[in-house]
Amino acid sequence: MMDEKKTVFVAIDYQDRLVPVMDQNEKLVEASVQLINGLKMIGIPGLATTQYSKGLGDIVDGIAKALGDTPVYDKNTFSVMGNAEFKEALKELAAGKDVIVIGMETHICLEQSVLDMIDEGYRVYVPADCVSSRRAFDTEIALKRLADAGCIVTTGEAILFELIKGSKHPAFKGISKLVK
Image (cartoon, rainbow, N blue to C red; front, top):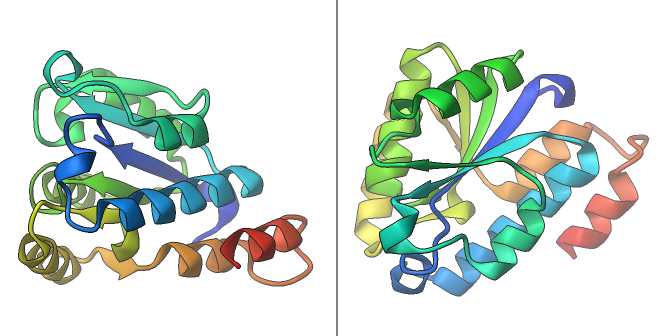
């Protein structure tokens, strides 16, 4: 089970030229914004990335607004772990080794990032409603591969309620309102 004091999130490549071509892109952004907002209510810190922002653009407005002042690292490798500054920031932030990873594309940047994180000893959670690829089949196969590799595949709402554990948590009312 995740512990709110030992968990971080990573948002991968929600960019202007990528989001519009993703399968179910509107649902992806909606679920991702909901999760990010909920994680912020709980106090979960995060990091974000862009893939070659010069060519693929900035983070889309809805996600950028939800991320707020979350640090963003531009990368030119598919795995976020290929960026030394990101890797060091994650190491400092992820004291408990639990990482929630969201973004795109599920079968490329997200998959390679998660596999590298697992290899580095992190316990990784991927909410299936907060990831996408251009084709649904690529997402389906990537999620199966990640689960087989030890990643915990779940949903954004399940993550939020797992983190707060019950109705006594200060963020319970806000989370309940958020997911309605």
